[in-house]
Length: 336
Image 1: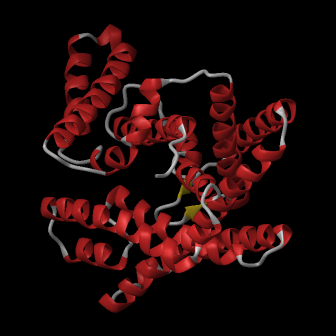
Image 2: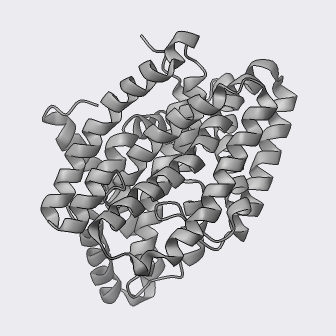
């Protein structure tokens, strides 16, 4: 049986809350905003999904060498992730049946947030190939080069989007974008893998210093990034984004690792982390957030002097509604 790392669940809890808040903020700021939320949305988009890749790399490093055999590991992860991808993709497709959505599902480009799952699968697989280079400096150089090149290629891909016409060209474009995402994802997986080696050797003071440096670099780079849409590979400042995402993600892992060493745990956050896959797949389903935002605006109109309070009330209501849906799904036998 695989060991459960409680601090990893806490990190995943922070990550999925960031994902939900990022989408909620974007919805609010996109329609008669109560407050200016562009900056929080931009900042959250820097690291919110990269954290899951870093955590995945850390957990990969805990496995025995035979557990990281390319074929064995990839098949196991495929069986874990792709059924979830297909089930929730069909739920999205039933809401809006179209040729484009069908194409996105089949190619792995993904509908809505579900693009994350094929990207994670391929990112892990690609990192296993990079890992075969042996020497650490070769792995780091190859991984960073792949990620940087993918970000640059993403801008060319977006420039040619308007010319895509034939269905087969659209399919090729979708697969190409998926490959670019995976090239970026493997970098974050590699960062997580390297973190395990660092933590096995570093003492408390060194860990604290590296944590502070990661957070400082991550926040500085994150605030400087203007656009970082990993889904469609629209990255305006690739080096800043890659640095910020990797540093912030590593910093979060180091923070919660240090807290657990001191026996400081956050059970509620860990529970959210354990449900992160289900939250990822459901939080934009069933019209939960639009309904909560609509209720928030109605309350705001009734109490114009309390707009900021209504905003945060709307956020809390949305999170509570998502959690309620999860409880109902789990109660009816969904296992994950």
